[in-house]
Length: 214
Image 1 (cartoon, rainbow, N blue to C red):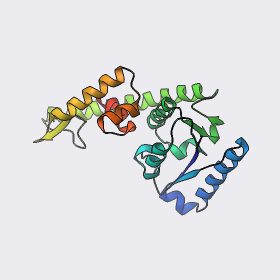
Image 2: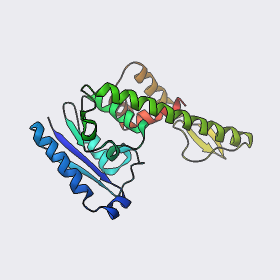
Image 3: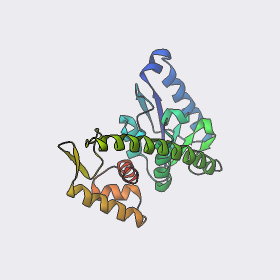
Image 4: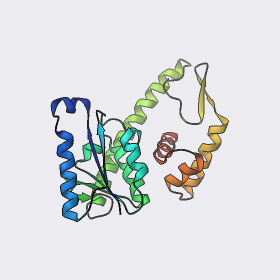
């Protein structure tokens, strides 16, 4: 078993509290010592907002790539890793699927494998669903308005489409990939296996499939 730590401070937190990272590291090291574990590496995310999904942060991406089956990740607090319940739930589902443990010290231990796991997942699922509902409604309102004007809503187009002259046009190659991802997921394939099959990261696969269902 490998043991990894994860700490993060935003730019504002760095300015206000220069020892924040060291405090977080000390908590991780202390917890590991009490469990008889040795921390192999602590991934330090400095100057990154919690609003950025974990898999899209430089050190978060490295951490998810490094941790595997039977490994353990330790972070001092839930908000060091996540600000969005949807991101937290998606990442926890991925880690649980792959057999990787995640200790959140402020929540009392491994949130993927012990008695508090069900409670944490239940709460995060409820909050995440509320977040998704609000996002869906905002998207619908914007799309309805723009559609009435004959204009695409802007931003990055959903996977499977290109924007041509202000309108969404199906991208045949991406549509084939999307269909394959859906088919594999419906058949029970894990996210990482789907990502390997289509050349994408596991969390990217989850976001694409989630967005396609909105």
